[in-house]
Length: 291
Image 1 (cartoon, rainbow, N blue to C red):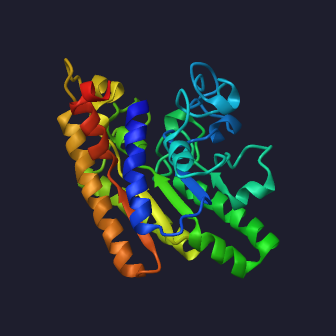
Image 2: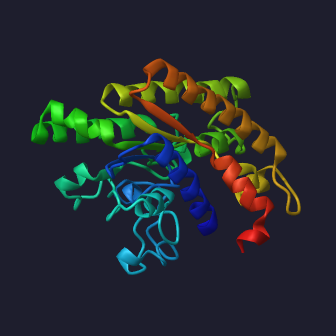
């Protein structure tokens, strides 16, 4: 995934230059395993990244696992470093997270988490979007105690809120039903609408709490990952066209939501849609170009 992450940087930097003048490095990261910085290390879950080869290329830890679901940095780590951040937002649940880090950023992401509360239940513990927003509220309360409401609002107005969700929700829809856990599924279109509806609620909640700069990341081509290709019985080197078509349908809804929110909240708020699907597909199709 290394090359795909670096391509993601280019996309994000362009957005930053165009939409985030005077960019600061207070970042609040919400999401799943793509951006989890170690929160799952502190909950009871089957979704953990606390053993090698995770972390083998992460220099700050000397190659030891940090709870990141990658050999090195997460997407959000790479972007922050590329833009000049001197440190990575620490996981919210880490007991050694110093209070001052709240002013440079916090990571609330959790592996196996989704937009919907029920997503990832097979992994037992995970922190869904609703709980991650709740954790942000706790951080906000602390900032208010230290700096007051007015200064807190100024800080949050300049901070970047990134949300990387949806992959696990869609995977959960396509994975085989498990006996005794129920097998009735809602219509796919209704399911995607349900995802968007829940995401909208939480985005508006974050806005009400003071967030003004959002990066909302679309879902990548999950039809090309090994798990999905296996459960969809895809042979050879092909991707699951069925799953990718669903993801494209979801991303159209998500992009539309971003446009609607920009209109609703006006010029003092900016929602940016990050088209990760196009970036990853370019790499998959032109893999030789990327080594």
